[in-house]
Length: 287
Picture 1 (cartoon, rainbow, N blue to C red):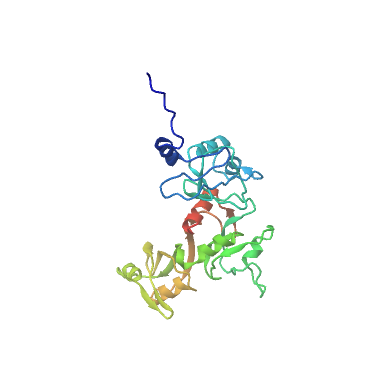
Picture 2: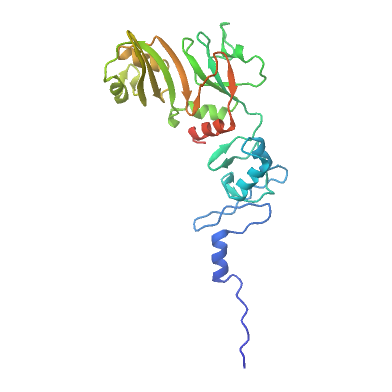
């Protein structure tokens, strides 16, 4: 007599193994990939939101089709959850999106500008003493913008402007060590060990300071052009540091903040940062 065929047990070892490897996913309800240490499934779908691929395309990540491919390949995360379904909708004002680990700003009200502050202009949006300030160069804009850090009136160059308060705070905080790069003209000649001394650190009245990098860009009789990079943000730090080693600054230009370069932006002019530059700023700020 042939023994009766046994029905597979529900929840058997094979089923558990398969589920453990891939996790269960309901339509339009993306979840975290379930692993040995994974927490509970997280649904990031907002039925009242906007389709994810549409938002990514509008943010300049790529065409709608390219963004759909990024989602399908598991390269897009929403609030830390990898999304692979094309029907997902999200709230761009509330949820955080990363593509290949880079944060994408989806809020179209956010503004990110690179401004070339001219010599003699005060770092203020509305100077109480009536001096020429950076607000005078932005009179056509309606947004309430913050300047990320400051430049002295007698220092020119790159100043970041944004209405993204969280990012502005992070970029200025010493904890995140965002580098600022300057070109300084100083009296020459320069001793050969100047860079070594500055990298080792020197003592100022408010504590020690050390540069992250130093190089001589040009040298002429009686003067030299040097590039200094440091993450310090103390007042007049570059001028005080170079004066301490016997080479007071003649002129000073900030050329870079984190990954953002001044480039060929003319004094008194500004340009909007690209989506790639904004993502790079978020990365530099650890966001």
